[in-house]
Image 1 (cartoon, one colour):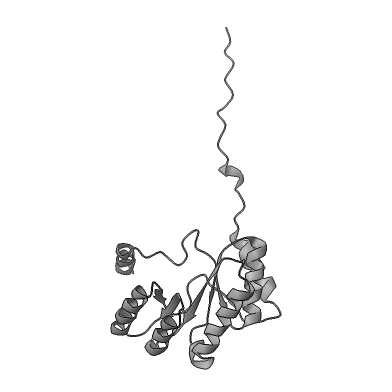
Image 2: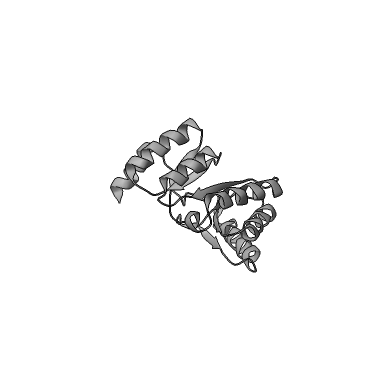
Length: 177
């Protein structure tokens, strides 16, 4: 574990749960994606929308690209990023990059990963590690997506601690003559 963290530090990688990292929402459909963006608008924060791992096989790359394009156009005033998780399918990850997706997740063979990183660098895109990132919230129920997203964003907003104020120096002692 320590070796991985050291290697990540040398590469300049940022921890997924780093303080200040935008909240990540795994979205299954357009209703959940829009709910997450509406919650982000209300909380005035930047978020990351991410497709579920394996959804590329069930829904298809075209659907996921169209989903994130539609959401980006409909909610253009909300700052967000979108990530298509291509699971272990290098061909679909390559195609997602070629279609203009700026962030693609992949968790396949190392040789394929190196080649995809090269393609991503040429296209000024980013290849991320596949799977569900630590700290991500899953929005899979359209009926409760908005409430869930708001609850997640409110829990991440840390109120100022009472003890965080600068301590005032103690009042001067009265000296007796």
